[in-house]
Each structure stands twice: as structure tokens, then as C-alpha cells.
Length: 191
Image 1 (tube, rainbow, N blue to C red):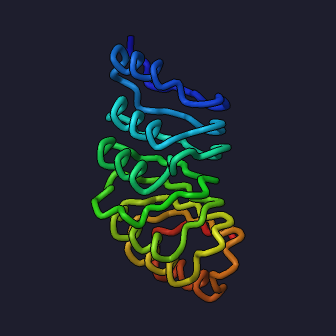
Image 2: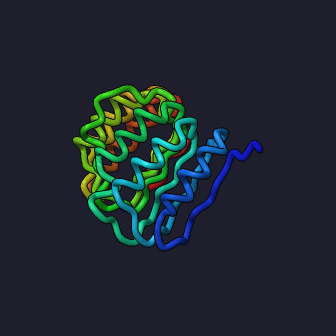
Image 3: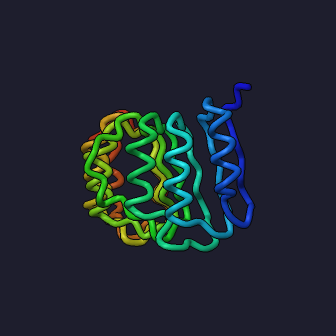
């Protein structure tokens, strides 16, 4: 059986035993949606990385309760190292997400949603160095992002086509105006 997509959204937790059994029989999974999970732990994130190394699309958005820093730099770091084909990663509303420890190349990552997180300029600097192939970066309501962090992304992510800065009140309007001139690939800036 060739199953490529699995949606576990809106469950109380990630069914660890079921995922292990599923992954032993289904090795073709490339898309996993785990949004709106009631409780997620670091062990769940590690399990996802171990069970599904072929993932291209992972949605961990909007967890209700994060136990043991589930969506932390260790958890996401393992996912990005193990699942080296990740192209789309949705971490929207993952309040504890931290990608600063990402010191490896994530060249295939094209779309990254960090909306409604505590991402800051240091994190954007790391992303700009590790994810140079980004096409889309969503930062809606990331209150700690400033013009400096956005500048790093625009400078280093040379293929960037879309950036969402709605609610990023610390990003100056003149920087936004310059982004279109300094990055010709940038086609959509949302404010």
C-alpha cells in the first residue's frame, strides 16, 4: 500500500504505538499533519522523525499544550536532520519553538510558517544561514522580529518569493520598501 499523506489533527495526543506500527508497514509517507493536537511532547516529535524519514511536509501547528518542550530546538533539529527532504514546515502558534541551535544546512526547506511564535532576530539570522532555499516565510504576529532580522533573511535567502510580516510592528516601513529592490525574487510582501 502506498500511502503518502496522514492527518492526525484535532486529536488529544499523537498515538505513539499506532505510529510505530503504521511506519513499519507504510514507508511512503511524505506528508504528516498534526495540527491542533491537545498535548505533544518531545518524544512525539522524536518519534515522527524516526518513523517518517521521507517527510516533505510536516504540520505541527497550534498545539494546545506542549509537554516537556516538545517543539523545541532539539525536537525540530532532529526532524530537520533526519527528514532531510522537508520542504514545508508549519510551526505556527508553537510558542516555545526555538531554531537557534540549527547549525546544519536545510537546503530543501521552501516554506516555513513561524506565525504567532516568539521567533526573534537571532533565530532569523540562523534561518537565513541554514535555509538559503526558502521561497516562503510566514512571520505573522512575531512581535520580537525587527528590521535587522528580516534584513538577514532577505539578504541570504536569495530565492525568497513571499514574506508575511503582518503584526511585526518592530519592522520599519523603509526596510519593507527596500526589500523589493534588494531581492528581485520577492514577489509578495504582506504587511
